[in-house]
Each structure stands twice: as structure tokens, then as C-alpha cells.
Image: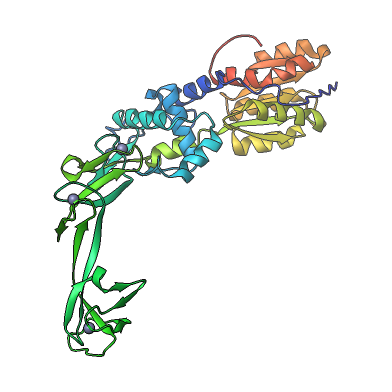
Length: 388
Ligand SMILES: [Zn+2]
Ligand SMILES: [Zn+2]
Ligand SMILES: [Zn+2]
């Protein structure tokens, strides 16, 4: 029996408060199904030196989502300038338009407190005392009146005639002319003995305040924060190391490999297999399902033996062997696999028989029932009982 469902768009796209995130958490929290799976290693007394896996189930839902966002965008290190770096944040915002930098930083802090994320501190850097911004402009200011209208000026010598004076005295338009002998000075030299007519030397510099005309060799140093506009002197500045957050390999891999829920769709009628795959894909906003297809029973068993899928959607009517035989084999290979039987109306008794053989659920092929497959998979993975 064949049912073709027209699905114009992703009708199963979960709303923001989707239960799928809940299930993701339970996925992290559940015990390992296979050797080397992602549950925490508790028994480390026996394996001294064995690295203890970080248990991500202690994270709150929003913290976990922030971590997923970072890992999915390839972010391993959150440098102190991360939040100022428009490129990194822009990319994250493209992936998650609702991203709030402040919330993300809060999550990083709380996750480091829980020991999930590593923290490192940089060498001290100058920070704004008001907003802790690090994008700071440096100015000179007058020692006497505090004005920032301080100019640097050179003291120039014309070795040819021996005249020394300020840059201002030598300036005539854009060029330098010796005010003593009237020679146009074209070339700066720093050798003491160069005595060409057109050469000049810079013998010193000083600072002059435009406001009070005070001349000084060392002006005060003042700062302006580019972020909040705060102006401050170095005595008021913050000079401390910045926090740098690192997602260690273990945590990174756990997050990256979370999408290893393997689903096998065994269905000889391709359009129908496509519809089921499409529905799962639409529902799977976090891309944690890896869906594969088989069109015959033998192909399905071969693939299952290799991949040990977590969930199998199994059509009973296959071109080569009967679906119940496939079920039996799969249950022998991996007893805890969730096998969902697809059946026609007239197969109800067989379906009940399949349940007795270890099938997790059976679905009568109606368009309504098929549309519920993604939710059924979620439910089976979260270990909850119920009806679809
Ligand atoms: Zn001169
Ligand atoms: Zn001044
Ligand atoms: Zn500031």
C-alpha cells in the first residue's frame, strides 16, 4: 500500500520552545548505549590516568544552547576581543539572530564556574574604568591646565649658519626656511658634521599647550574610551589581565558529535522514503539526526550491521525478504535499537506480532501518522512512553 503525501513546506519545523531541545539534554544525560559513547566515565579509580569525561548534563538549557552555537560555528577559543570582533559575532548572529552578546558572556562565565569551559587570563591591558572597554585612544594633555590641545613641536638647527629655533620659527608655508639666513631647508640630516647649506637637523622636541601656552618636555597622558566616551587619566585606569575562554577538546567533541542519532529508513517506494526523510530533516532543527535509506531487506540488514542505527523505520512489505525477518535480525544485532514498523491497514495483526518481537512502535501508513514520525523518534530516544 502506498500513500503519497504532499508536504509543501516544513510543517514540522518546531517553534522556538520546541521539545527537541529538551530531548537533546536527555540525550546527553542518558547512559552510554555503546562502548565509547558520550556518557560520563564514573569508574576512573580502575583506570588511573584515564581522562574523566566532562558531564554536560549539568548545564542549563540556555547554557547548552550557547555552547552548541559556538561549536556549530567552529569557535573553540573566545578571545577577550571576541565580542568586539564584529566578524565572529556577525557570523554567530547569522546562525542565531536572537543572539545576545551579554547573555553569551554570562553563559561563558557560568559554564567556566561549572568547570565545563576552561579560563585563561591574558597579560594585563589598559581598560576603561567605566565600561571596561579596551578600545582606548591615548592623548597628551597640558600639565598646567589639563587641555588636550597640546602640540608636539621640533627644535631645529641650521648647521650652516648655526641658528637654532622652534619648528614654528622655521615654517614658511609648508616648507622650512631658516629665519636667520633665509636659506630654504630641504633635507633633514642627523649627522653632526653635515654642513651643506640646505641641510637642517632636529635637535629636540617639546610640547606646547594651545590653551595656556605652557611649554613642556613631558605632557600628561590621558585616555578616551572609544566605547563609552569616558575620559580618564592613567591613575584611574584599570590595568588587569582579561579572561579568555577555551572549549576543550572533550567538550567540543561531545557537542560536535551530538548529532549522531542514526536513523535508517527501510522503504522500497522511494517517494515515500523521501517524504519521511524530509519530515525528519525539517523537524531536526539542531541537525542531530543522520538519516540513511535502504530499499530492500538485505540491504537494510547489511547497513544496520555496519552502522548500528539508533532508530529504524521499517516497512513490512519489502521486495526481497519479509519485514519481520529484518526486525528479528536487527534485534539480534542490536537489542536496544528502536524499530518502528510501517504497515498498511490490513497488516494490523502482523504489526501487533512485530511489537511482541521487540518493535518499539507501529505506524499505519496514513498521511497523518507518517507526519508524526519525527515526534515519535524523539519520544523513543528520550525513553518516554506514550502514544502518537
Ligand atoms: Zn641659517
Ligand atoms: Zn595648558
Ligand atoms: Zn568606557
